[in-house]
Image (cartoon, rainbow, N blue to C red; front, side, top):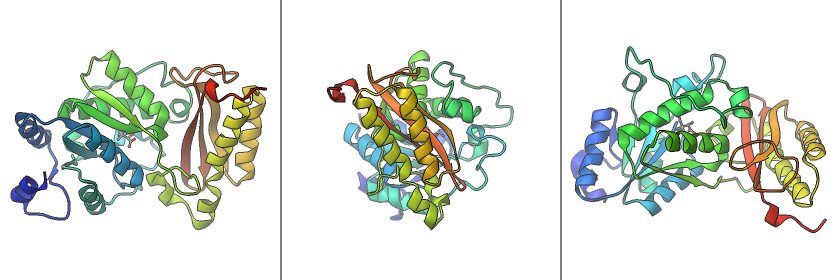
Length: 300
Ligand code: PAF
């Protein structure tokens, strides 16, 4: 797998990088010509072990993996962190090399959105509420760029993390609605030893905030236990919000219990559900979620 890479590029510090639609299509066409299957791992870079687990999942499912690195401007709101979003392409390449990824697709903004670009992919239903309410432009931007990435690369499989659970459901929705011939694979959230979900935005946390951050996951775990014991969601969610604020978070965008497939609100753990939260700690907006399934309900 790596012999042809070195012959092509002569570099050892990462997989080959292509920056154009034409380039990524040519590389993938060569793989297809050899009868190889392809997994796409879309990212915004500043890679951590969560991203590398997506690469590992892609490698388990397909012969070839291509990671994309594109900090997508249209999914950020005007007051959000686009300008300061962490970037380290050289470090990302080294990590992708170690993870066995075959190709990095890193287009510039002009390649992705050339002058005159005037199209948007809009998804209703599952985009409403939660992150869709707190970040109104986000899912339109995600749906548009992921549609483009899928059509540019036409992979067999595309792998996304469950940490962005609502995003995963949005992507599944438009892939189904638009008949895009790709399998969307969700991969479990990767966590630090103390439970904090890995995220590129964790780099915004000060040392003191980093020590407070695991309270979000801890509280979701506590709330999931209460729901498994048969408790009503309303009082559990109210107490969970209090616990997160008491742990030092400044505010929550939401902490809610939803149906795992449709994201409609649930009153109890009567069918597969998900507890989802977004909360602010200093400059960092942390999101996390945990499953709640009726099979885990203890006798009340
Ligand atoms: O989850 C992300 O990193 C981004 O939202 C994605 C899916 C790469 C689209 O820009």
